Image (cartoon, rainbow, N blue to C red; front, side, top):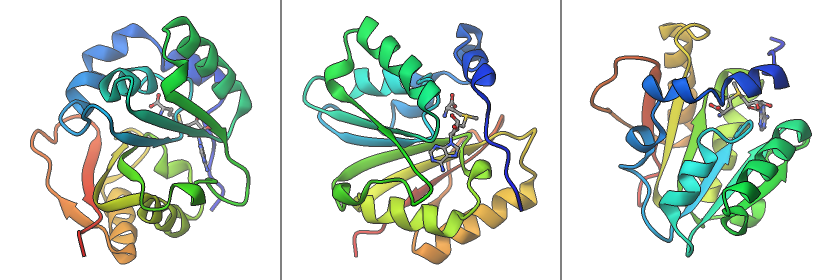
Length: 187
Ligand SMILES: C[S@@+](CC[C@H](N)C(=O)[O-])C[C@H]1O[C@@H](n2cnc3c(N)ncnc32)[C@H](O)[C@@H]1O
């Protein structure tokens, strides 16, 4: 099935500060991210969540922001520089061959795929790449928009992740968008 990739004009809309009312980065991510962590954010767009993640990991941490579209990354780069956070955000442009995160194997504490997975044609390959990048015990937060992704489609996505070996952890407060926490077990 062909998947539509979010165009840059929507990227700008996603930076709207009013979004905080429904998707507050600190509330959504603060419980998972600590000082010094390595965080992977595939499909970062223009970085609505990236700057908040960079603040959470602190000067000793790193956020690897991976994106298909160069335009999204150039806007994120400017925003990171303006916020004085460029030194802890690494921008990576993906190609057709995959996320390009093989070098992170077993190094990532936390990954956040927010409003991304429904745009990915090969979800099994996507989850395998994230699985390899995560440390044992590492976590992946998947958030999908209710308006685009039915419950059945979301369950299919979670089933694909579980086939990779992820364990599903129920999140409290599941109102709003579809979300699940997926864990790479320790063994
Ligand atoms: C709907 S936007 C969400 C952006 C951001 N996560 C947010 O919530 O503000 C989805 C983003 O994923 C990117 N994307 C789509 N397929 C991708 C892929 N295979 N690898 C990396 N990024 C991808 C798109 O270019 C787009 O910027």
